Image (cartoon, rainbow, N blue to C red):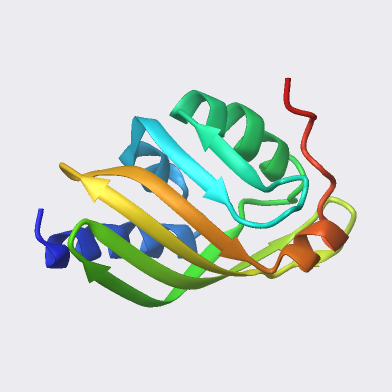
Length: 137
C-alpha cells in the first residue's frame, strides 16, 4: 500500500475509535502484532501477538472503564509503511475518575495490516488513574 492508502486506512480506524468502536482496530492487527508502551509504568512494555494484547492489555484496561473509550485523532501523518497519529482519549473509570489521556501512536503497516505500534502517552496520568494490570507471568 502507498503512504496515502496507509493513512486513509488508519484514518478510518481512528474514526471508528472516536465513535467508541474498537472492532476495526482489532481486525486490522496482524496475528503477530507488537504493541509497545513507552515508559516505566506497570502498563509499559511490549505485548506480542493479538491474543496476548487482548488478554494481558486490553481486557484488564477495558474492565476499568464504564464504557468503551473514545480516541480522537488530531493529526495523522504517513511516510512509507509508517503512520503517526496524535490523538486524545476519553473514558470514565469504574471508580468515577476521568481518564483523558493524550497519545502519539507510531504504527508500522505491511500488506494492509497493522504489524507494530509504539504508544507514547501521559504516563503520570495512567499511574494516577489506572489500576496496574496483572503481573506478567
